[in-house]
Image 1: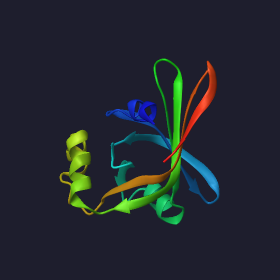
Image 2: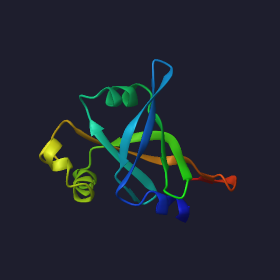
Image 3: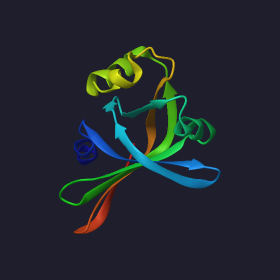
Image 4: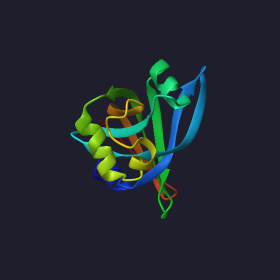
Length: 132
């Protein structure tokens, strides 16, 4: 799991997949941070991705490193309204202030993966898989 965390070092941008009407939807997304075995992300309640997450709370996040390794991490998400979680997102990504002004903005939503699966892949061999 150490390799997964290294690949998710902040700042970390990748792609987030959701489900929309039974079909996959993928968009660029930022990973916020990991804490206590939870992988945190954020969005806004006025976006389509939020609607998709509330209707079908499963995601997969992927990113590729410069050395051509790629990570997939996915599972069921939980929304987190704890202001400390929101403040940590703002601390890790100061650009959020330009978008939401403050962590207590009602549009600003944080969610996390706590139980799921991850895999690290490369062209050099079979994937390494992890459960969390």
